[in-house]
Length: 408
Ligand SMILES: Cc1cc2nc3c(=O)[nH]c(=O)nc-3n(C[C@H](O)[C@H](O)[C@H](O)COP(=O)(O)OP(=O)(O)OC[C@H]3O[C@@H](n4cnc5c(N)ncnc54)[C@H](O)[C@@H]3O)c2cc1C
Image 1: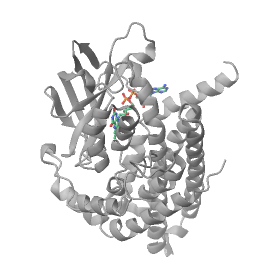
Image 2 (image 1 turned 90 degrees about the horizontal axis):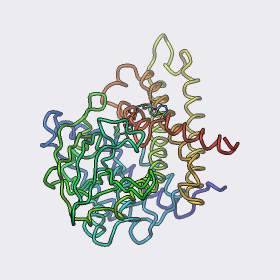
Image 3 (image 1 turned 30 degrees about the vertical axis):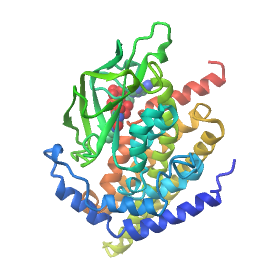
Image 4 (image 1 turned 90 degrees about the vertical axis):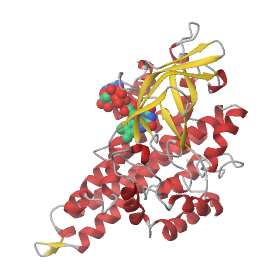
């Protein structure tokens, strides 16, 4: 077991850090101010991307800091999951940075799906512009009408009729659907397959968002914030008819693809949580050292030093666990690293949520405002305890695997 970053990983990380120091940190607060001014919550159809984003993406791309998550050296940076992990951590310190390097969810997961399972025509039509950063994408699995943490509950359908596949169903929490650059969704639905088992009944289908029958019904706020211009929508698919080549890898392969999609993506999410937690700890220390109450800096009051120490311990624990999961994923693949991936998916967002909560407390009222990224980090951590599988589902899986080791 060796978590020491390779020379290549260190080189890319150093350049990402430089880019963040020079290009992102000086403008980030201004960027979010501009985004909020451009996108008053009400009408998502008028949402616009912040005016600095495309120019910064072009700069990052020109510097070779692009598609860093993709292990393929021809299309991405050629970094393993373990090599990319410290870079994901660093980008996680900022809520705007992942997109600048074309390393943002859900595009990264969708690109991985297309890269691994897409046909040549699908790659040409969708993967190429996604890799170029000229369009964005959405992943539609969760449904309002059923408990979607159990994916076998899914009701939406992808049924073959002659030379077409017909989609019907309601999805929600479709992240990124508000972005004016979003052009395609990966839709997951049931395709009855009598000869197949429980996990061969679902398909993934590529849906152009302008296809007839696709309607965004509303945007869902997270703690009152619509997360414009990204957004999380409720989307209805009503008799959407597409040619059969819209299936990814063919009918019935949805579960198999979903397994592959989520492994590296979970590592990326968790490393970004760790970066966000490091940034939070810095903010907490700076704030608590620079304000006084009752004749002392806040940091010297009550249990505040312990809060800082506990944050350090929790961050380092989560990082070690996540690097271990990344290492194992590289060594044996997602199926062999299920315990480790589920473990970090529980640990890292909980860790971030707890540290941000302490940091908000130490910031007083400022912690609840938009003057710091703390509320954004809190929403990120809280949402991640549900998205890509709620904590309890991951714990259930870990327990099942542990019981299995004892033959139970
Ligand atoms: C901000 C945000 C963004 C999201 N983005 C996307 C996206 O882009 N695409 C997408 O498809 N979905 C997305 N989701 C949806 C997310 O993946 C689902 O909310 C999640 O899978 C849970 O499904 P559910 O909401 O139907 O909860 P349910 O399945 O109804 O579960 C509710 C609760 O029941 C409990 N529970 C469930 N199973 C068990 C168990 N085995 N043991 C004990 N307790 C259990 C848990 O406490 C769980 O939280 C997003 C969600 C959020 C909040």
